Amino acid sequence: SVLYTPGIAHREWREFGRTEVIDNTLNPDFVRKFILDYFFEERQNLLGSLGGRLEKPLIGIPGKKCGAIIVRAEELSNCRESVMLQFCGNKMDKKDFFGKSDPFLVFYRSNEDGSYTICHKTEVVKNTLDPVWQAFKIPVRALCNGDYDRSIKVEVYDWDRDGGHDFIGDFSTSYREMSRSQSQFHIYEVLNPKKKGKKKKKYQNSGTVTLLSFHGEWTRNPSQPTSLHYMSPYHLNDYAMALRAVGEIIQDYDSDKMFPALGFGAKLPPDGRVSHEFALNGNPQNPYCSGIEGVMEAYYQSLKSVRLYGPTHFSPVINHVARYASAMTDGSQYFILLIISDGVITDMAQTKESIVNAASLPMSIIIVGVGPAEFDEMIELDGDEERISSQGRYAERDIVQFVPFRDYIDRRGNHILSMARLAKEVLAEIPDQFLSYMRTRGIKPGPLPPPYTPCPPPALHPLLCRRVSRI
Image (tube, rainbow, N blue to C red; front, side, top):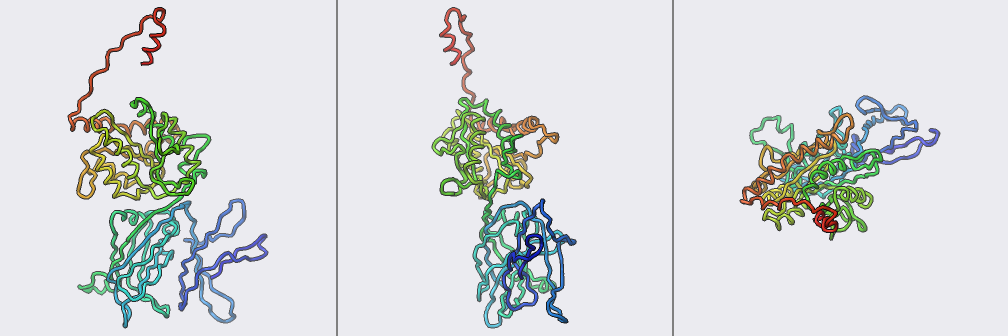
């Protein structure tokens, strides 16, 4: 198929793009999609039929039916994520008389009306019942239009040269379900409804398909108003409000008020390498910032120098702080890590292991979720309902406190009130976490500081008074 769009003043038609060619079939289902930009200031003829589906007869040969074409249209989300997926099959049904099968996968995203639209086909793996398909990268909005919970249907076929590919079976999943498969392989049963409907006692499935790898990738542009990092000249973004809300209280418990500030999930200059543990101030040898104002300044400057990029890994920054805490187990210092994030945790297994290891160290972790996303993984890390574990080991104590910032935003737009509510909630568990570490190790408070001695009268010792007051 070839798509044409009207030119200037609608006087001519210009070719916009072409689909792929599908051989030996009268019912082609094209994979390639066309993305058309919408311009508010221009008049554009857009598809407005019910459900975004339009069916028209094909014309061109007088007196002959040429079939019909079906067009589906959907407004795309602003999602810029991509995901790299790889699958393999095991014990696929044998479909070829003289051989095994030539399996391939077809992916469909669900539409709002319950129908499905094809979005990807894998290559064909010849003559095997245990295929391993090549990894492929696909935009998330093509896979599910940015809706992590939208159903994704996958059909398995045996390729035939004449185009009459044999249906082996199918299974359903979602982006969110696949994203949770990073710690272990996710196995899907391939079911054929016709075989299942015959109620054969021996029928279990038509094979299995395993998700071998899932790697989410995305970019974020902080210059766009839709970005959670957007630097508005009129008010703080959610990241900045969370930093200031928690930091302005915590900094009073730090003697020198020098805070290491790290970022994760960005491409760094000059070579564009992706980092999940970089200094916001650009100095990896000395990531410390002076006070919360210094942290805020480093955050704003980093948005101008790095390119925000997924996936979201928590474990590197947790391990970073844990290395410092492991050297200070005598009770002289206690570390608090504040993590602010808006996305799905893509190293969940490693993060759990890092938290279990850190639970025996003098540290606590505060996680603030910003934005409209679901935070199921972060809620799991909180450990209020069930103590977090990794590979059969349970955390010695609960050291994580998670809160979604949206639950504490004042609806009238009072940012000071929003920050006060957030700080009160996220810091509520810190005293008990601090005391639990000290008590289990028998660490008692140190001696009280010497009593305050007022300075002598300024008229007698002005210089001494200044020196004493500074001490």
